[in-house]
Amino acid sequence: MPQAARSVIFHALVGLAAPIVLAACSGDSAAPEDGTGDLEGTVSCEQDPRVDPDQGLAKAGDLGVLSFRLAQAEPAPPAKGNNTFHLDITDASGAPMAGALKVDLKMPDHGHGTSIKPQVSFDPATDEWTVDSLYLFMPGVWRIQLEAYDAGASATPLDRTALFFCIEG
Image 1: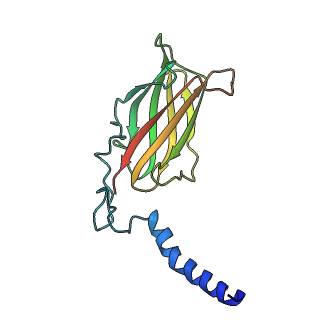
Image 2: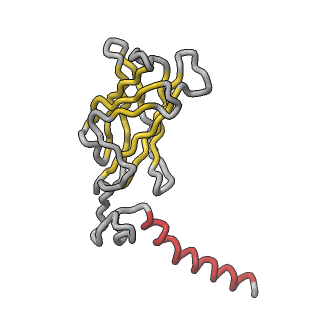
Image 3: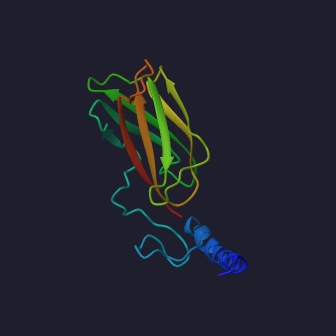
C-alpha cells in the first residue's frame, strides 16, 4: 500500500478514536455497563465496596505501626472540587506522629491523578495533620494514599494507608 494511502487511513482512524478517548474521562458519556452511572452521564459510586465512610474514619496502617483517623472533612462528605482533611496519626501507644506525611490522589478506575498538589501541614498544638487542596475534580472513586515518615526523613515510610471516597456527580 502506498505511503499516502496509509497516512490517510491512519489519520481517519485517529479522527474516529479521539472522541472516544475524550469521552472516557468526561461525565458526558452514556452509562457504563457496570451500573455506576445513568444515561444522563451522572456517576454514583456510593455502593462501591472500596468506598470508606468519611467522618470519623479510622484505619490501621498497612504495616501495623500507625493508626490513621480522618477527624474532619471539609466539605463533609467530600465533594467535587477542593477539599480539606484533618487527620490524627498515632502510634500504638497513642502518641502523635509528627514526622512527615506524603499524600497522593488517584482515580483507580481511570488511572490518573490530579494536577494540583495537596498541601500538608502539622499543628503541634493540636497534634493534627491538615491536608488542603485535595482537588477531586471529577465524579467517581478517588484513592487518597497516605504515607507517614519519621522525623529523620527516612526514604522508607513508617506506615501507609489508602482512603477511598466517592465523588457523586
